[in-house]
Length: 243
Image (cartoon, rainbow, N blue to C red; front, top):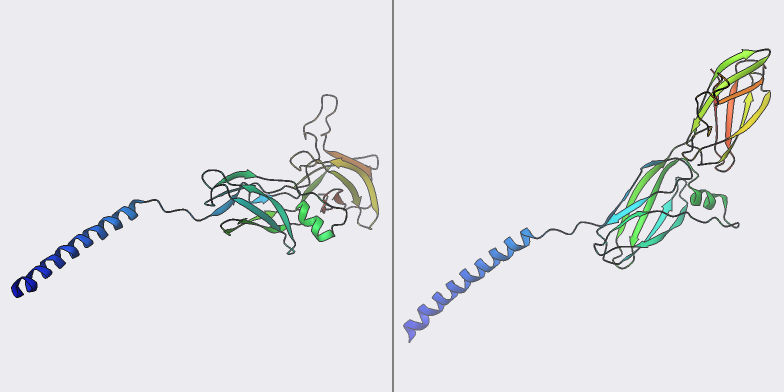
């Protein structure tokens, strides 16, 4: 009896340990083959946009059917709500974008934040309401550009060709010329096209004239001249010396 009690417990212990070790090894191998859940995150369709263009956002790794709230933070630190969306059966959402309504009581800073109207680096924050998961992404709003060059000078009149980029889509743009003495010569206004390009006409010539369509003509002053353009919706102003 004493001999059995001193031998068999040790044999049973060894078998149990061996079985547990094999089970642990099998469990470790099984876990190693399981795909890891990706961390929640958002991405932007474009990381560089012109003023007035809202970011297009996709996300993944959130909970299934979870509401995801979003905010925009402007370069001056103003934070505005960017609405919300819901994830699908995979915990993802795609191509979310919305236009933020501006209220008459909004301050200038809030209005700028709602209309994407400040050049610089912006941030999007997304938060899963159920999981409390946060994710961030950034994008850059670029400033308008303007180019102009002399096309012809005739009978005290100057004609220049011009072009611009990064204005609000379809906005009216006021144009004026300033000569070297500071005299302002009103010219006209133009319209940006759907891509924010100025003017909203082809640079090619029409069938009845050899003059390009993207031209301005004004009474000659004292050269050199500067052309200025002001977006009447975006409030963006840019200028360039006429070459």
